[in-house]
Structure formats: C-alpha cells, structure tokens
Figure 1 (cartoon, rainbow, N blue to C red):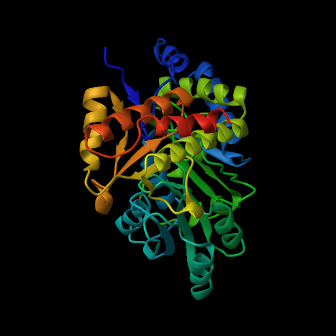
Figure 2: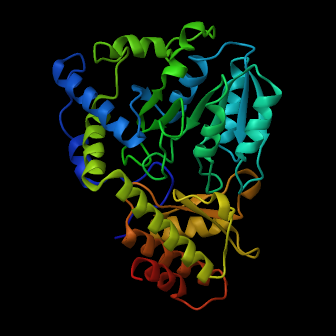
Figure 3: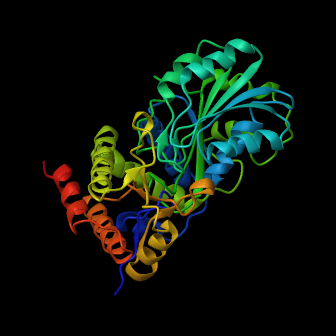
Length: 379
C-alpha cells in the first residue's frame, strides 16, 4: 500500500492524537464548556507567540487574519510599507490595494530578505507611514524576515509592525513582545498540525490604539467585534468549534515538549535536509543569511523539470513536496520540516528524492543524501 506523506508547507500532517480530538462529537459554542476551550486556546497561543498581548480567534484561513489586520487598523489613503521577499509578501500589497491604502513596496530579490536598514530609510523619508507589513517566513523562497531587526527599527516610529506568521509560527522563532511586533497573524494548518479553519491574531496596545480611528468599511473581519466578544470569552460569529478544541490539544503537545525545544528540533530537521541536498550535488535557493527552518527550497539540475520530480514523488511514491512558484516554477522543489514531521519522515523524503533524481538521469552516488542527513541526526 502506497504511503501518504506530506512534506508540504501547509496543510501539514495531522497527528493521531489530534485526529482523535477532531473526531469527537461537536458541542454548542455558546456554552461555558466551549468558553473554557476558547480561554485555554488563547492562553496557549500567547505561549507560542511569546506575548502578553490579546489574541483574537476567528473561523478563517490565515489570509482572513491578514485581512483583519489591514481593515481594522488603517483607513483609505493611509501610507504603509510592505516588505516583499516572495510570493506571500505580495499578498500584503494586494490586500492594501483592495482597500485603498497606499503601499510603498520594498522588494528583495527572491531568496533574500529586506534589510532593516531599508525599512528605517523609508520611515525616515516619510513620517506619515502608519504600518509596516512583513512576512515572518516566506515559504515561496525558504527565507525569513529579520523580524527582530525590523522590530527594533519600527518601535521608535509611529507606525505599527504587522507580521504574517502563518507558516512560521511554532517552527521559526518569533518573540512577539521582545521583538516589538504589534500584530501577528497566523493559522491552524501549518506548525500547529491541524486542518485549515482557524485563524488568529495578537494585538499590542500600540495597535489597539488605532482601531477606533480606522475608517475602512468592514464587517466579519472587524477586530472591534472580536474585542467586544472576547470581554465575555466569546466570539462574534460561529467559530470552528472542533478545530478550536483540537487547537487546545495541539498547544498542550507543544507545551509538553517546550516551544524552544521544538524550535531546536525543526532547526535540526532543516540542517539535515540542507546537508542532504548539498551532498546530492544540488544547490539551495535561499541566501545563507536569510535561510529558513520552516522549509528548504532546493534548486533542481537544469536538465530536470522540478514539476516532474514532484509528480513522480507524489503519484508513484505517495510523498508530497511543494513546487516553485512564478519565476521559479519548474526550477525548485520545497521540502517542509514543520508540524509533526520527524527525522524518519525527512529520511524517507530524501531517499525518495534520490530514487527519482536517479531515475531522471542526475549523476550521484545513491545514498549520499540520506547519509548526510543521518550525520546531522547522529553526529
């Protein structure tokens, strides 16, 4: 029987412990029983986010939390900075454009990140900037933003710092309070090991002060509604009941291991994947200074179509990795190391990649990739 293994950057595999919770009978959400789950979920999210800020939970994909952060703190005509370092950074620009916000885009070459010095330069040039939007982990390229450095810059200005941490939360370090991140957006279906359906965002006092002055028309994603409901430990609209309850269990799993221990585990998985790729004579797409522990973007040999590698791995061997996007489509593959993925999953994925590359004519000694990864796991 062909196995099904997801080595993709979301949705990720759901572990059996969480499948059991997801399979329980549904309860009504306007009850003290569900309120207890909501409260525990919010407290657990504060632990993972490393924040004391309020966290609001909604039924949505991660993009819903991103949209909420645009419409709830800004007004048409406001000026913002968007740091774009890949496909998902472009989503911030699209959201701002949809609501009449003037976005100054600072682009980084794909595979690199936007330097904090560029953000400072833009803030110095225009004192009317209301917000800076960044992408914590840019999964289209396998890179990270310098969240800490950018946070140190933005804290001294009137602007708020808003981060898309949909893919990076719980996998790549994010110290919301220490790094002065005012709004963090994330979701259930990546590092938190759950199906899509729950999104959430944390809001600092600095960001909260802007809510009352926002003039963008809004309804479902209006943070004022979530803030008012949360005063009664409730949600303004029907929540994703089963996923919220499973989120509580997911956060318990993370606490049992310890968030910093989990971050170290993902760093080791990433290091092993990178070592395997290099041993196979392949190159890494991301610049060393910005490389991510969320996933590894691997450049395929010029003679091999990355799309064919993906198709054979998935359709013949049951192992799914992610394709490149836009200009790098057909040129790279992306192997995630997040959620419930462990050493054996990475070794299985590398072994499958070796098999397919050999089949497609790439020259290397079979087993060198697996051996390189094993040396990281067993130094």
